[in-house]
Amino acid sequence: MDHQHVVGTLPAFVALDSSPVLAGQRRGTSIQLDDTYFTGQLRAFEAFDADSEERSTPGFAERPQDLRESLQRYRQIEIDIDSLTEADLWTASTRFRRELRRIPEIDFLKRQFPGRCFVVPEWLQSGDRLHYGARVYFFGSEESTTPEDVIRENIDGILHDSSQQFERYQGRLHGYPDCCIEFYHERSATAPSPEWRSIEPFADRIADESLGDGIAVSLDEVLPRFSDWEGRYAFFAREFFPEPGCDTARTHGQAIYDELSSAEPVQLIEDHFGLTFGYNYLVARAVHTGGSYRPTPGDLGQEHLMFYLPLRELVTMPRYS
Image (tube, rainbow, N blue to C red):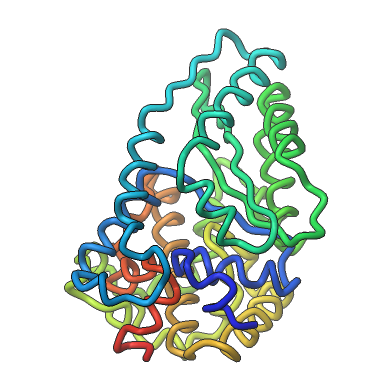
């Protein structure tokens, strides 16, 4: 697949994560739509593309303004729910989705992705508090899942106080192995979280002292000799935590790596897998230490921020050209 032609205008991390969906290697994938998504791209444009008028991607020069407008509209959305009833949750979901679809970035993603792309509200209950966010899903053209299906499963999970029910559903939507979906829900008060158990075998190989230094460091410094790590292919998606030693996840990831690297620079795909692993490490470490930290673009080095550029522009960088 010619990824640069098919999804080259998408942010690189989105393009490379969604390409296996178009190739039939994964059922679907998704991204969280939040401040980080917008500000990461704006920071990448500012840091790496001062000469944007010379870039070849159609509409490239207009992207920062579109992103700023989208971020402003996203921040203006406010949702109130009177009570945790099915009727009120559906009313709020419908209103929220209507507001999300007015964001210019949603129209951009739908136009640039050749499969099915839609945005839905995402509800999460923590104790007696209900939190909300937004998620954009990407599927192949034959996928039968609808936005209403996803919202219904989410609401059912909230009403029945079962986050695991919805998480399992999401795992299947994302094409994760069944064994890893079950592993992720093996939680107890006395054992480390499954996120940490998944990552822990690799934890001593990560240069923690280089994390958070932004574009002053490279991913090579954060994950020394990552291309030699046995088992790295198992981490083929953000926020996917495979069961340690899972051959199914490793084989699946290897197939995705082979397909991507057959059409793109090998270094680009090595970095894609390295950034995916590094992102998962930061999430797992936060869960393990009781935090709620989400990685900021650049925490894993300059390549982390670069991957917020459109794929078609990223491949022109000296590291990949």
